[in-house]
Image (cartoon, rainbow, N blue to C red; front, side, top):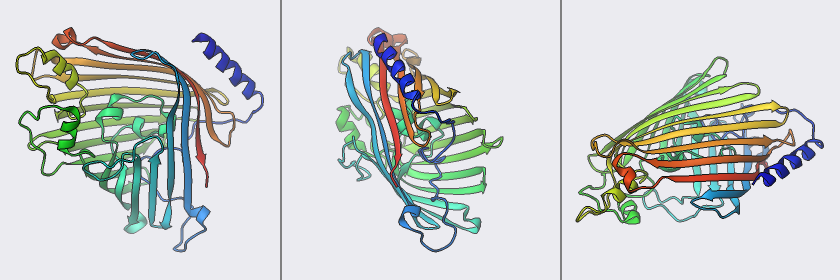
Length: 407
C-alpha cells in the first residue's frame, strides 16, 4: 500500500510544477445548501427576467477513486463515489427552484412519498414579505438538521457518520418556512415525512415482527432550526430540534448542535447530536440485540424500542501551503438501551478516523486530487458483546473530485 501512496505524492508534485496560482478555503457556490437557505441566484434585483445563463446554474458533482480496503472486504476496486447533476435558478426575483439527482442511485419510487430515491432536490422557494425576509420551500429538499457534515457538499465529504448515512432521513418531502431575522440569523420550521418508505415496507424489508406496533396515522416530523453567523461569519452555528413519529403512540426526539469555524486557510466543524428513538427503524442497533436474543426459545427478531443514539464528529481542513490541503476527521457514536440494564449504555460503539491530503491544481476550478486513509470500527459491549464480534475496516483511497459549474 505504501508504494501507491508514494506514487501518488510524486505525481502531485509533478502536477504542481505546472500550476502556480494561490487558492484558499472559502465558502462558495459549491457548498451543498448555502447554509440550507436555498437562496435565489445573485444579480437579479428588478422584476424583469434576465438571460438564461444569468438565471440558471447547471452543476455536475463527481468523485471517483481507487479504493484498497482490508477487513470485512479486501477487494480493491475503482469506484464512482459521487455522481450528481444539479439544476437551480430563478423563475422570478422572488421564486427559485432546485433539482438535483444522483446518477448512481435507483429511480424506483419510495412507498410513502412516491419520489425516486435518486432525487435529492425537486423544490420551489418563494420569498415574500417586507424585505423578502420570509421564504417558503416546498417539495423534495434537504432536512433542516443541525449538521455541518451533512450541509457540506457531498463531493467533498469522503466518509460519513452513521448518524448522517443511516439514521437521518436526509432528503425528504417537506414544507419549510424560514425567516431571516437579520442577515446573520435565520430561523426555520420544516414539516416533513418521518420516512420516505411506509411502515409496512420497512418491516417487510427486514422481515422483523411488528411486536404489536402499528403504523402512525400521521408519520410526520417537525424540525425547528437556527442558523447563525457570528464574529464576522468566522463562527457559524446550525442548531436544530426534531420531533417525529413512525409508529402509533411512539414519538422520537432529537437535538443536533453544529458549530463551524471558517478562517482564510482553516476550516473546521464540530457536530454533536442526541436522539431518543422510540422504534429503531433505521436498524442500526437492533441487529446486534437480535443476535444476542436469538437463542431464546420462541424469539423472533424485532426493532429495538427506546434506544438512544449519540454522535460527535470533528473535521478539520487546513491549507498548509498554497494549493495543498490536509484534512482530518474523527467521529464517535454510541447506541444505548437504558431500560434494559443487561444491554445497557453504549452497547454499541462506532468509531471512525480519517486523514488525507488534497491538491488543487487549477485555481479557477473546484477540482482536487486526493488521497486518504480511513479506519472504522464497530465494538459491542455488555451482554451483547458476547455474541457479536467487533468489526474493523482499513481503507486507503486515491482519486479525483470535481465540481463543474457547466452553466
